[in-house]
Image (cartoon, rainbow, N blue to C red; front, side, top):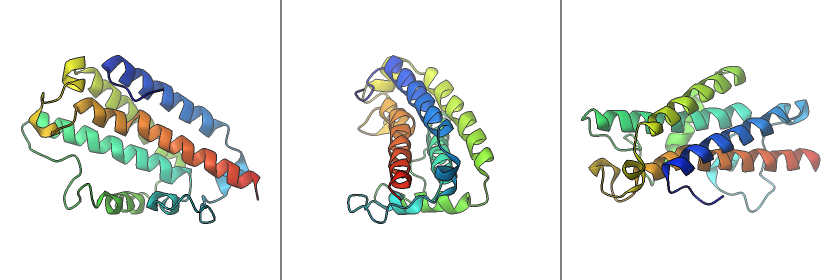
Length: 180
């Protein structure tokens, strides 16, 4: 599926990919759930996230925290509080460090709690997206605080695109477990 460019496609892709992610998770074996994610032997997987996340919980809380980013960013700016999407002291060049902080923050979060907070935040993000018109989501220049992009692109990044990322990571983990 191509990247959503309409409200209908955004909501549909977010719901579909979330459902696909949950289906994939439900089919993980006990061995796959117990085995730490380890991509160190794969030369192509050099981005920091391949090393950062060690288990399913880490992936779920990462998704949750990115939901929080969009929820806080949109709600703050709609209420007249000027905030960037990436909170200080981070920026688009250092957001990898922010992701590590998210990871650290949730090392005592259980897998069950991670799944619950992700489900809740997924619904909150979709409910928030529903409050905007198609033009508000996908026309440039509607909201000054969005910058040169569209509001919808941030929703896509925090939902369907991020769910794709999670599924790719989990499928790579499953492949690793089979090849042991």
